[in-house]
Length: 346
Picture 1: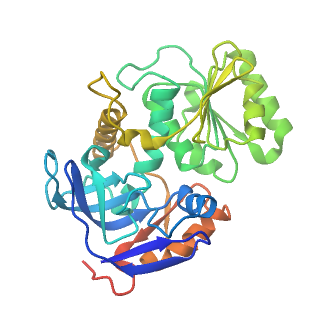
Picture 2: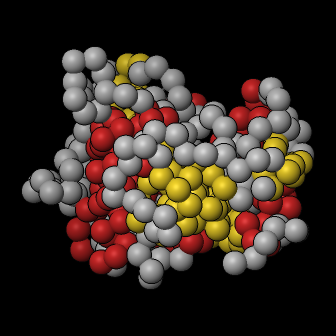
Picture 3: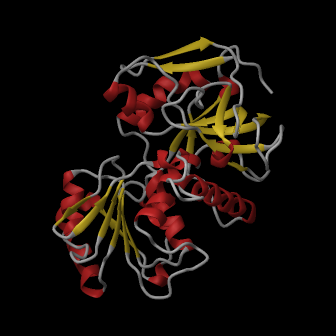
């Protein structure tokens, strides 16, 4: 099969390699579409190492199921989150993922849309529910509960808004720029949701946030930008007594001026439950992915806007360099594997 390997200079080499097999608890998936994520260029560029397949967003057909897998069978249409930093990622004709981090795609959901969901949606769900500890959708909040989402047009930001809205978390204060028309479709203005345009400058953003803070105590923020400037900005309005800021940076939690800044690691959903416990993040992930599958089928959940990078795996290098250059606004790049030169078509 064909598999793409990315080196530290973001050059991509397509190799002929054996088809992998599904281990216990895993699915072998014939990859129809692969998603892309910012980490796919950041990891090789910043960490170096041997060239590797860094893709983690899979959409395709189940080819085989490993020992102990229930709920999936060959031929099923699925999307899945491949375990980061392990072999057999999504930039290949066949990929491997844990069954707990896979979910069924209804016929109404394209593989392109499905490939935008796994990693970004789970990053958002872990942040909203496990880290910020906002209520799950079946126990929605009943009082105004402001949530600031900085970088609302990013995939993680948009999915954070979607999950928060499922839990009736409002008002949502979305900070965005060029992606504002898209973000506007996610908000409920009747519940006080607003958009702040960061293109008007930091003074404008600070003033608009201050106006919200005068009406509501802001205890929660999801910061998909996660640099020093955004942390400083949010720290001015998030409550200093019990406020929490969710970062997308993998780091230890810290307390700054009374505000807890939470580190992020979506890879936790591939870890076993802690000693002495029956369930953990892996089971949380399985439950959320099943919820997403239901939402796709019933029409109240959707993926992220996308752009197809032409040429299949041959288009990966250009997509990664576009991501590095910040050219993806309110969209994700996806690759159709069948467009890769010499790959057999369906």
